[in-house]
Image 1: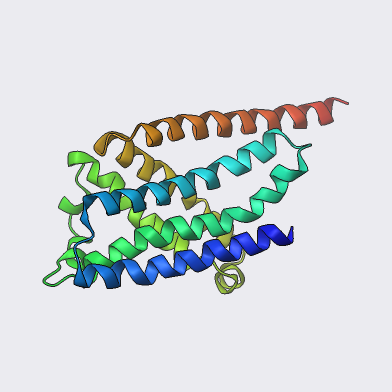
Image 2: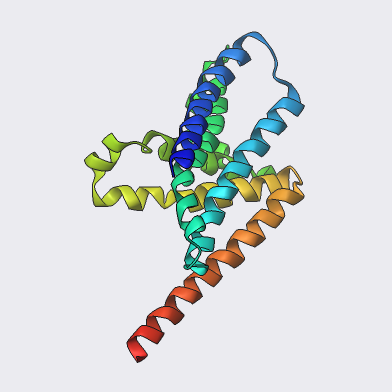
Length: 199
C-alpha cells in the first residue's frame, strides 16, 4: 500500500511538472508534432488506465490487488489532465492568441475534423483537474462525485478525437475495451444484487 502511495505522489509530481513545463517551453521553442503526439499518447494512456481499473475491480471483486490499484486513479487522472491543460495554457499564452475568445464561439465546437470532441475533452479535463483535490471535495460535498463522472466525457471525447481525427488504433481499441469492461461491470453488479435479493 505504501508503494502505491509513493507511486501516486510521483505521478502527481510529474503532472505538476508537465503543467508548468509545457506552457513555459512552448513560449521559447516549437514542441513539434512528434513530441506533442507523445505527450497526447501519455495523457490518453493514463486516462485509459483510470477507466480500466474500476470496472476490472468491480468484475473481479475477490482480487484484492485490483481494489488497491483504484488508489492510483487519482494520480493517473491528474497526470492525464495536466498534460491537456498544459497545452490549453500554451494556446492561451501564445503571442496573438485568440484561444480564450474562441472558447465562446460556435465555430470552436465545429464537428469538422472532430474538433468538437477535442475541445469538450479539453474543457472536461480542465474541470476534472481543478476539482481533483481535498478542498474541492469538502466544498462540493455530494456534487464532487457527480463532477468526477466527467471522467467518462473526458475519456470518450479524447478517445474519439484520437481514434478518428488522429487515426490512433490504440485509442480505438481503448474505447472498445473500456466500453466492454464497463458494461460487464454494470451487468456483474446487477447479477450480484439479484443473487443477494433472491437468496
